[in-house]
Amino acid sequence: MWRNIVSNFLTLLIVILVALGGLVAWAKRQYTEPGPLAQAMCLRVAPGASIQGVSGDLVDHGAVSSAYIFRTGAQYEEKAGKLKFGSYLIEPNSSMQQIVDQITAGGPSTCGTELVFRIGVGGNDVLLRELDPKTGDYEKVAEYNPETETPPEGFEAKAEAPDVRARVTVVDGVTSWQIVQGLKEASFLAGTIDGVPAEGTLAPDSYEVKRGADRQALVDLMKDRQSKILADAWAGRAEGLPYDSPEQALIMASIVEKETGVPSERAQVASVFINRLEKGMKLQTDPTVIYGVTEGKGVLGRGLRQSELRKATPYNTYVIDGLPPTPIANPGKAAIEAALHPDSTPYLFFVADGSGGHAFATTIEEHNRNVAKWREIEKQRQENASGN
Image (cartoon, rainbow, N blue to C red):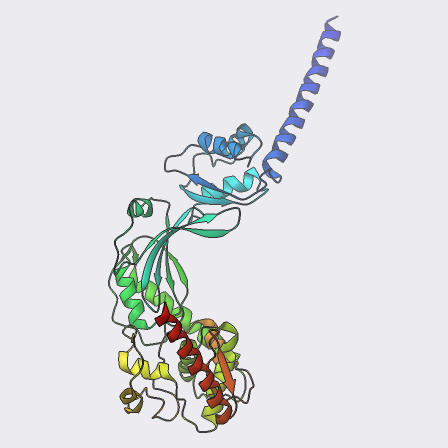
């Protein structure tokens, strides 16, 4: 009898062990295989949050099938007590293991609220925006001009939340002086800047920064990035260009940047100025004259006077031959590429066409007709504006 009892007990034990093994294997698959989340979500891990609270949030949002397995897996990997606060973009079908890795690795938040200081040609603005995890697009929450407006009610409280990311965005075509002035106004940055960098040497881009980041360090990063962009573009430049150095190409890129805001036109505009250089013609471009008047310190805010167009200055391309001595703004990567890979065209002239772009011409007669059309468009617009 005892032998039967022992035999039955061993059999039962084996069955239990096999069942436990199967259960463990199933739980492991649940932990490591793709999860049930159908659409991306933003998971906020608050300071001091517990693995139990986070697992509950994930279950509520349909991101994990079992809070218990999620917690057990995190504990087994010795990560349950290593949560890093922040806002995390959880991609569809992320496994429990992937989510645990994400929320314990730390680093910058990948969703939630973002504070953006935007340095533009016509001025600066500050905005709060939130990433919609379902579309991947940012939605504006609030915005104001720091030079002329006070923050909207509740703006500062939201902006100062610990998991809000900070970003500085520099628009293509701003001057170095405008960038320095803008960075001084960005209250979430710290430190001073060692003077205004040489024109054209800062890369317009969007820079994620930490609160209290050093302003000079950010300027240095902009310099390094622009230097690399120019070096790479110069190394792969088209043959036969009328530039003696990368610096001259940067000057041309800045002119192209200021002459057109239409991406598809950049290489065409570059071809016009290159054609004029090769024929010994003056560039005759208003943005260079404007830079000579403003010295890059803001926007002119009016039309050029005839006296300014006639005055001999290093930047008056109606008077001087060839390129001005320096860039007239900080060109973006696309403008640099256009200056070093221009279209092959016969064009020597262009003028606004009323659509936001330009009409290009090969002969002065054709150009004059385009100018007449543009003046008629301007006249009509003025009449419509005065009639309203």
